[in-house]
Image (cartoon, rainbow over all chains, first blue to last red; front, side, top):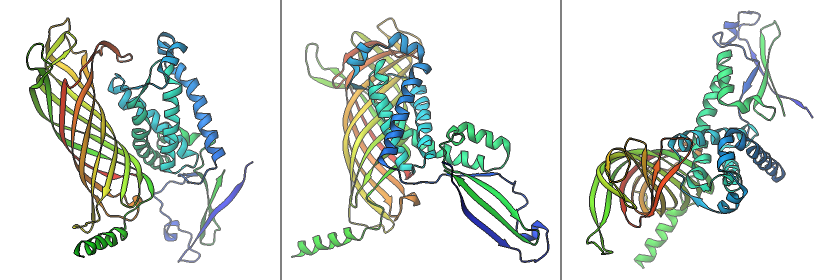
Length: 220
Length: 235
């Protein structure tokens, strides 16, 4: 169901009556016009919604893990190993590239997925923690035991990185230039998908008599 | 009577705390440390007595994160501190292979930590806290220049030590009403770690971890560190 709500109407009364020079109307000409404004709108979620997201992310990890690490999955994985590794927790011997770059990066995208779905920052971190813990204890054990580094660093460093990416991507997306928008979407792909709740349509309004306005509308 | 008055006074002060509480939070920052790494060696052949054979003192830096819940006077966090540095002229033994040389040191510590915010506030804008907790750690020495009694050479080896220990800390945090105001924290902590297991790892293929040798290493390596952490409450 698509509901369009008129979110906010802002009218600025010009101090100079009929004068139609935009600079006299207080409009910053140096700013580009934008069709959309990107932000995050935090809201409450039901338990059913939380379960749906956890289940959805869990299903995606089962698909992504073998696809992204096909060789490891084939060479090192087995259901016997799954049984042996179940419930085991160790310090892994992975290189910093994996523990300090790949895992925090994937954690940051998980954090931004939940942010895009309207979770506030602390709830996004908590949901990421649950999702990555489920992955560590029930998916990755097909090839290796759950690791302390991954359990902690994926959601926590992911959230720290995620906050930085969130701020940078919003700045880029709201810069109004196409390069900024493309880069903003690349570093924060969740802003491209249907579930992203922070995309607000902007419609400029000018009545020709000195009144200018901006209509905000949001789809959810 | 005086004691009761003092207790009442402390209770009243503790009730007038303005800082944020009853919330989950994440704080993160950077840290600088003075580290001491000691390698244990049996004092006499055949004896179980061990003494520290060599020490290495070195400076380190890194970053720390703390995710947890805060009540009015207490907070409980799952904390992580990473320390990076360089060690020189130390000997390590894993099974029958000994290594003597230098390398890059990396220590990842994960710790459930309990902190208590003391009611006494000599600095108006800051709260004092005391913290403690057990530590699980992985210490890594990435060998760069070394000699070995085994068939190992080159730069593609690292020694890792699973360790346990404990830490205590004293800290200051800005006394702000909302965590969204990003209170700054400064913490000085002392940690002590003992090794449990040692691994010799071939790092030539970064996509796979290739453990060449594994041994029990109870107290083979002892680490101590004085760590100064500075950061902010992110959210």
